[in-house]
Image (cartoon, rainbow, N blue to C red):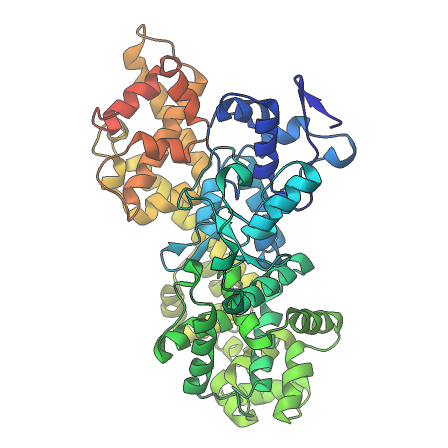
Length: 567
């Protein structure tokens, strides 16, 4: 203990301890009667329950938690489940995720990151090893939550070989501050069947090794590694073709070994489903899928995590030769022509990658990787938009015109326009930016055209506007939407002049309530009425309203309207 906050001494973090665990130990150490009191001291809010995976309010914590030794600043990657997701994140996505946690949007971040399959998410239950509890009590005098144990797909303690036990309220999203010793009891040792736990233990070892390796995964390289490893395993022939029945049978047998885990509900049971699950992963060049899905395929193809990591390190170290050329070209036994000859051949088949793959005797997927790494453009389509059409093409792209509209204006095929954009990242970026701005202005004008009185009645604007526009504004133009709501809330508040005093915090809370009432109504789980639970779950600091509603008279009146006096 080398820091004191407002008279409360702080404990040092223990090895592999989560931020939730550290705060839970502080709560027990300080002996405060309510979890909300601890939250107020550390996070600046009075929530009695927080999420253990992405605790909100760390921005407030870092304001004072700085300057001395190990307490320099909290690295959220090392104390939250961001550590699990980091290897499959871009720098921009990681920075955005950290910002979401610090600004209090941990729940929204969980919804985005934890999606395993269509409309299904990992629940991130709290887990602990019974032997670790005893060992930690002996070594540190505390039982605590280990970060490795919380990784999705990890249900075995690698140190003791025991299955992890989860908190009884495993379906809960948030928890009061609690430690393993007080919440999890040890099972009878004779009830454990260690021999049947090997596949699950093997998967846990693979996941922890990949995460602890802290290697940032490149999606393009990873897809090439999948193809090469499938060739080594005999799943692909020399032409890059495969027999899905053989691949599906092998993958299904692997799925049956580890498929008992609740997180793996999406695992296939038929050849058709197996093909769909695998094809999604093998074509995920942007790494949009959940990391667990990739690590399951990696565990199936490589089995040994060191083999996978070593091969990835070797591939990343050899920057002079593309992965496709260094690994896959040798397996095909083909020697490619130089770039000029290959470009000419590409143009001779009129830009058809499939036809070019047939001519060269390789697979289309691997050829696309090679063409992209070599920067080969669809030059024959450039001729179709040469001369005066080039400037018109650029102007149409900057205006956000649809691909079909551009093709119609230039009298060329839509495929030609798509090819130009797919092979010119600058043009594609300009067109996407223009489309985004065009839709944003459309969404704003649509909201402005609505009667502002609909904001303050049970017939919500969400019932009159397109759900697509509502979701777009909430996700991509939230600041403008909040400012727009605050303007109309102040106009609405003039009707109550003299009845109560209007404050900025009250207006801001009203704006957030309006935004989340719209978000709730456009969601697929909408049940017909907004409730206090919805607002408490998604609006940071809503507990302040619960504690003293008299400080927020406008918000109180608005909630009564939106909930139909069921508040």
